[in-house]
Length: 536
Image 1: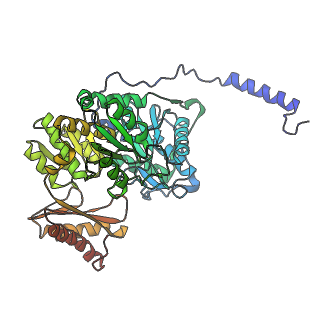
Image 2: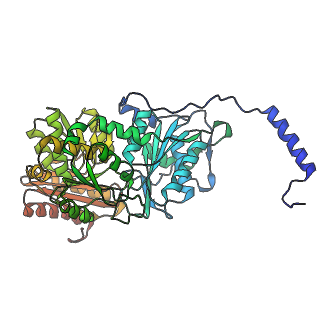
Image 3: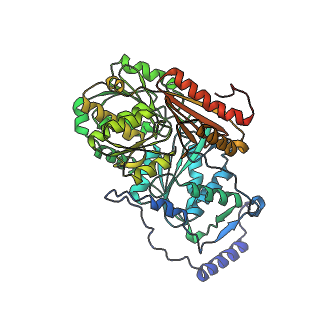
């Protein structure tokens, strides 16, 4: 007899019991599962919907506490979230059990039922991470729509357009390949607010997850239409005919990241002549480091003038950031890019509002005010800028790190959309990018980091506020301390992801920016008791 075969008598007894139980406990009649469909019209919802989701109840749903690793009642949950989601090294922070906990905590916070969209980048660990998250959400009652590899803004657009409850993007953005992460979206496609992050951290810490039951399990399906819908919206918000008449030659460098599945198609649809670098998706990033900094784009800067192209475009790993190279191979800083976009959008929408973060250059304010627009500064970070764009009905928003917000398309950082607007801007002006850059106000910006122990961050910030407040013309404290002097400003703010202070300084002269930067570093070091020269 086969040693693993079930004995006849026992099998009959098992079958009889199973049949009897099926008669006593028939499966519930659930009907046809509701299919997720994108709305015919794009109707952006107000930001309050994101805030309301924080209060989503799970009343009536069973919770399960795994007491073996449960945190003490009243104990503060350790921070998991950084500036943009949860990031860490695969094999250290990110192991399968942690992923299941995060998926269960997100599901518990949202409260089933509903639809959640799931996408990822091309990092080697992303397929497995996405499967664990999706499976966990499905078991806890959500209908999971798997979108596959795509840019983060593509996921965000589809969350908002389709009326989904939320979305998860598996990506570590521009971090090195050993890292991975998860970005969490609310119903508007924007990142979830800080109070929601704290709630998820508490759920993980105290291990109070929803309990899966077979009758409440959701579904999992794929949706191949997400990228076409996204690209269609970008084209609908551009003057495609104007761009196509110019037939610009563009060199695109996706950096082996997610824009490789969207941007080549988009640029060809807009009538561009296209040359690509590093356009093969590869999560080890063999072509260049994922962050599109000046030092990482030497090949793109060399190729653009070599072949006579009009523009170079580079993205980070998940394509929410963008960097441009002019026709001469010049690197365009994030602040100059914001100035160009702000001026162009105010030409199209006179008197409009432009929103940027407090870390951005005075250049942006100068351009906006000269163009007759209204300037608004917010805390740094994607969500504060998006909220500012929403509240002030802005025509454009941006950050100096390469994030650009296009509210007519979607109010989230969108690199591919920014590439289309730059092409429209160049076509409308009929001039090379280097000439437009030369018209921007000239400022010098210096950024440095000062390590500080986590326990000293709060007290050091208070010392900075008192010290700079007593000597500067005025200070702003919406995000750290920004002190204004006759020849420029210095901003000292704690990092959202590391135990350090970031010091930004700006002036019109090299001497001025160095002096202001040194003052910002010194005011931190004098409180922490360390001598000068400990900043980077």
